[in-house]
Length: 157
Image (cartoon, rainbow, N blue to C red):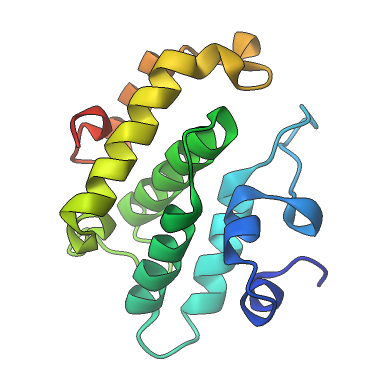
């Protein structure tokens, strides 16, 4: 399959995969023109579940992805959505994800701080995200993420 997670690993393109760049772009259902993170995240988790220590690999790859992000509307939007994907799948106990483990607990204080910076940046610059006018306001989306099981206020990291 073109643009799969194994290819991303082999080509050192994990960040491009999670951002949905190039051949890793998966159109949103209804073809609204933006990337559908949940499809790529599902594919990544499905691949990882077949490996030894899948949760540790998830943490490793998420850290790599996080380290590449900068204060940019698309980077912040990508991060917010990928965190939402994680909590959604964890709440549903999909693959190997359970509520007994929390990706955020695995991160350093500096990595959490970066998440907070990017989520605050997203809140303050949501109008710069393509098609944001057609989306729920960011505050509502943040409440939905909490409903999916994110125990943290990402704005306070």
